Image 1 (cartoon, rainbow, N blue to C red):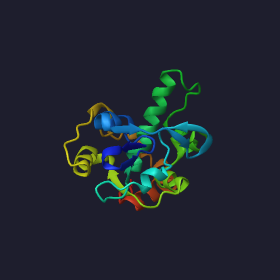
Image 2: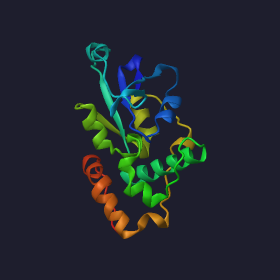
Image 3: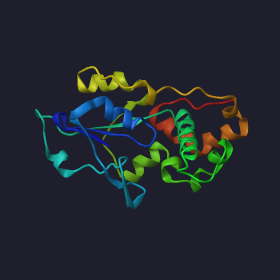
Image 4: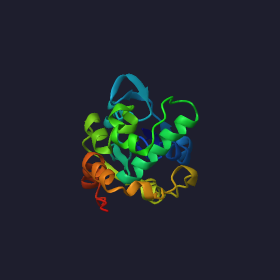
Length: 194
């Protein structure tokens, strides 16, 4: 979660929605907030979503707290999460190697960061009043919200090219039924078909 104090704006970044990139791009007035993990009360991280009462009570220039959540196409997000998992495997942070199919079919056994949709993330946090920022147009939407040009390092938010292995019909049906459907409906992304 990122808090922009001079505008009383919170930007919530579920896993793999460019949180590091957004924080770097927003500069010194954007504070990275670390707090209770929404799925593990014994852990803290920057994906927390507990809105502090001080922020809620504060009014800046007559405006109440503005809350935004970064949403992302669930298909590209899933591939991005897998690529992040592969990176962690390569760095030795995760010992067990798994391939794409194992990742998709067994993601419930992985850390919540890899197995929760954005809709599940929102439900777990109890978040109700928010607006969305699309990952696919981060710079433009952030620039509009903050009323100045925002430039993000492209390394962290390049769009993902789908590979042939993604379009296995059985796998895609599983992804639709168990991952993509709710986020597609909530955020207006089209459901992929073979």
